[in-house]
Amino acid sequence: MNQNWHGTLIRHLLLLVTGCLLVGLISGYYGWSLAIGLAFYLGWTLKQLLRLHEWLRQHKPDEAPPDGYGLWGEVFDSIYHLQRRDQRVRGRLQAVIDRVQESTAALKDAVIMLDSDGNLEWWNLAAETLLGLKTPQDSGQPVTNLVRHPRFKEYFEQGNYGEPLDIPSPVNDHLRIQLYITRYGNNEHLMLVRDVTRIHQLEQMRKDFIANVSHELRTPLTVICGYLETLLDNVDDVNPRWKRPLSQMQQQGERMQTLLNDLLLLAKLEATDYPSDNQPVAIDSLLRSIKSDAQALSGQRNQTITLDVEADCALKGSEAELRSAFSNLVFNAVKYTPDGGSVRIRWWADSAGAHLSVQDSGVGIDNKHLPRLTERFYRVDSSRNASTGGTGLGLAIVKHVLLRHRARLEISSVLGHGSTFTCHFAPGQVTKPQPKTLID
Ligand code: ADP
Image 1: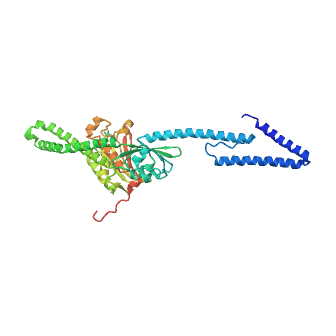
Image 2: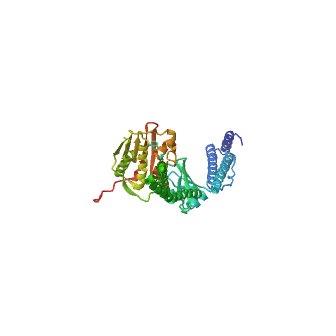
């Protein structure tokens, strides 16, 4: 193998030339015999080249190269070995790919690979059961054509995959699926889909339980509060010493009623993804009415409440839900701002959408509490909370209402210097206000 082919080639050529010269010596035609000899050599070389070309073009995977003589035989063999080595490497790679595909095919979770434009490239068996993908017809199709839920389309196009998405399965409405999308390589997407029907059912049971308990407690509580009111009205006829305990009982009863109402509202908000009402809501008049309620709540506390409406636009959604969210923010600002403080409500719009901010000069909130503030019953200071009479559900309601209106809540606060709660609404949620009718 390690023969010196350089030397051999030169020897062969010298042999050919010597042969030709000998023939020339015998025949007397040196030039012709040399030319014929070299032409013969060239012809033979071309023939070998053609055989090699033919073999490279048409050989079967395991077919050995044609037999060759000398250097050409060596070239044939080397190419054949290179090919065999390449085949072995490819075989090993294919085995790895097959194992990965076999293991992902055995997964209960769906794995889908999408190209940079969101077209389907590859998926496992579970993707066919969970998403109804069909092999091979759906290959190359945009995923948004096959998973047609509007929330999926929005989620996929926004490209913000920090949080997973929960939607009903396109194959079966009773199946609930959770989608995770990760970007990899050249902006390709890897989509994982899990069946979360069981977790969803448990979650649903929890929500139903809270809604039912709150509903069932409402009637007895109304009766108790009614009697307490009557007793308080006639307390002097019963026993004046009962006045204080009775009024405390009435206060706590009212607090429980507010709590139940908030729990019922939250249950209602959680029941559907979007508000059933999707009319343009005039925010300026809504804020004016909330401002006058806030002034009533503030009473004699000498707080300055200002309203700056800088945008003449409406929001698509439910007026009742938006009122509840905005008034929770404004009333919190009034509650957590000491006497003489200020509360500023501002409504404006720009290219990023419409925004509402409620800024106060109140007690402020330590940074460490901010991420958990919208959790149910999360309180910064429970002793302070008891005095303000809050339920701890206000910001949870705000978060849910905003989610349903494609908006997000931003909270910034400096302890001791006040807080700003800002609601950012997506441009798609902003609309023109409805023209006022003559009756208005
Ligand atoms: P609550 O009914 O107790 O006010 P919320 O969910 O509305 O419940 O608020 C949760 C907690 O966030 C409150 O207990 C309070 O400590 C804090 N908080 C809310 N708004 C403000 C604000 N404007 N300034 C200071 N703290 C606030």
